[in-house]
Image 1: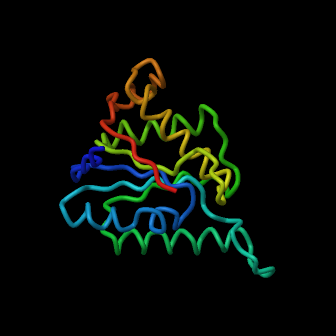
Image 2 (image 1 turned 90 degrees about the vertical axis):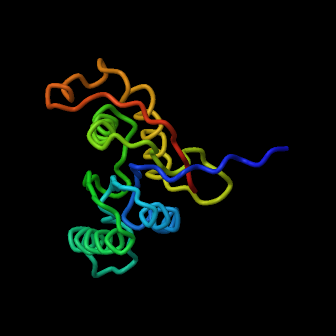
Length: 172
């Protein structure tokens, strides 16, 4: 048995992250290492995390605002270059062309060598629906949708070129 090849630090990487904090808890160490080695990192935060509280006095609006600030602060500490929020509500991700198009648009804009996302397969452990859907959308966006011009041709009208990502990595 041969050891797995070590993945070299990319110049550009994009993380498709279902909720604020999922990136840091899942692959924060990798992000910090890559940034330290010169990588440019984009976070695409899919939901605003507006439902994840047991505080009966909390509102969705207040929680979303708190989670946004926390996410920006965490990304800044790690050295993430850009955080892009898609602003879906927590638990509201769907495997549809709207969501897919938004992720494809970010791949075409950022042109990453590596896209990282949560594993879309439900394992025996806990797996939130948003985790699975965002992971599957990320994989679909990488291939073939971001690569092929006729998928979302309006992107090229807005100056975005197609892109073939070299590698997709999953966590979770």
